[in-house]
Length: 386
Image (cartoon, rainbow, N blue to C red):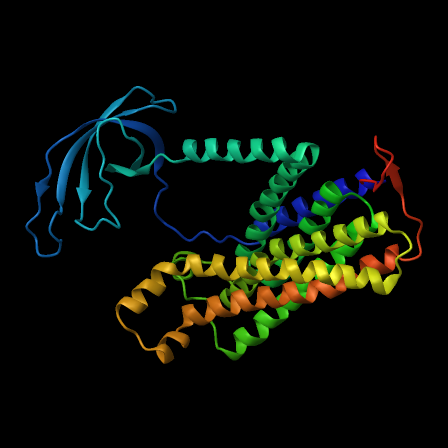
């Protein structure tokens, strides 16, 4: 029965994503998609400076020879013009031996070959393998389950959440749906069917709902439009899609807080269960107090984690504002700064809300039930594991 419910839920998510993806077209580009090939740089010629006033110093073009290393054209050598603007934020300084992505665009009689970016996916793949190996090495079977849950979460976001938003569905409703499914799957795989999973799941849902409501209320009061980032602005002008950008902003706040709130809820539920296993005579009040004590300790670090994570993302902006001596009044009223503050505080308040609720539900499920103890080799008692 448990496996049936899980499979049915996953199928429902996939079907919802498929329906959303086909509900309405959202691509508006009239430009042909370039062919993308892996390549290695063989030779880099001398930069021919461009004296035009439209470019900064260091701008120009240099001939580059590359050899394609992937796809049906692997082994083919191409010579192309590599343009430099003189701006290090946009320029790719290539050298022989560098692995790059080459774009080839063909539109009627027009064709263009250019270097798109450096190849980074292989490095990311190796780092991902190190991450997975560390999970399995330390977490064992549970670490392997975490990997599976991460994969399902990624599939849910990519094949369900994103297509639903692009098709014009409510971003908040879509995020709540995916978040609920992700929470359920995580609890099933990592915690198992138990009172601990129920209390942690309920605490997570309460915290996420609180974070979402606070983000919506204060974001609306602050007149946030969801167009503070370059990505959102590009999406607005590049796609013919009825996207609710304010909804996308609030949905991002909910999704960003989900993982931290889930972490806190599971920690508290696990602590209450372990305490009850060690001392089954503890009543509801004692178990709640124990859960709250653990929650207070976790809150200090987890709320700080959220604040630091959002601050780290906005660090270049903060440096820019301080370096240019922008006044505090103007800084606090900037759309981008207000967005990040509301994002961090709504998630942190969601953490706070999840603590007492998780502790009370976990204590209510355990109070008055017999403790399940096992004996280790020394004869001492210890709580059983799930």
